Length: 221
Image 1: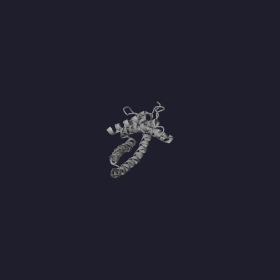
Image 2: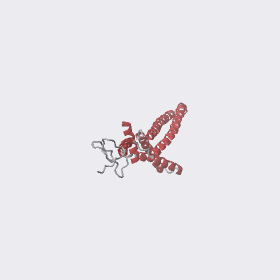
Image 3: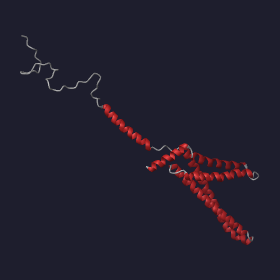
Image 4: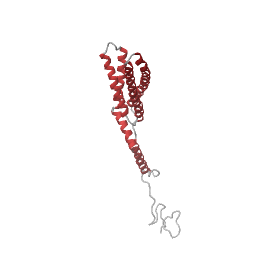
């Protein structure tokens, strides 16, 4: 009778089985299927988890991000600083003129009776105009600072509206009295009038409104 072939590793009492065959009851090792890469078998789950975390972080950043300051806001603030500097000069000149007229009121009354009251009234007008110019100057400078930081645009809008009113009176008034107005004064009044309008228009654009709204929303959180 022919003996079954013996395989390496077999011993007495054990059935001669091929090396690839395991006895009944022992679990078989999982065999990789064709095209499957064992070392990267768990990578998709890790990538998916990392992608979800990154997406959540990116979405949170996008929700809280504030858009960059538009160029129109910067230009309006620069115009505001220019008007503020001019306001400081005008305020100093008005206060200085008021002080001169106030000191001359007594001598004018002695020289010409009744002239002192006129000089005193002029002095009062100069002081009042100087205080108004000082208040407008503060509004323009502080409004420009707050506009640049994105805190508020209301102050600069108010200051720009006042500038439109005052420069508009100066510009259109120069046409009514053409005999005393020269070309240089008319052009200068026109430039100030255009700058005043530009301040208000640049602060009211869609990009500027979105910038200030995003800043308010960020402060609210």
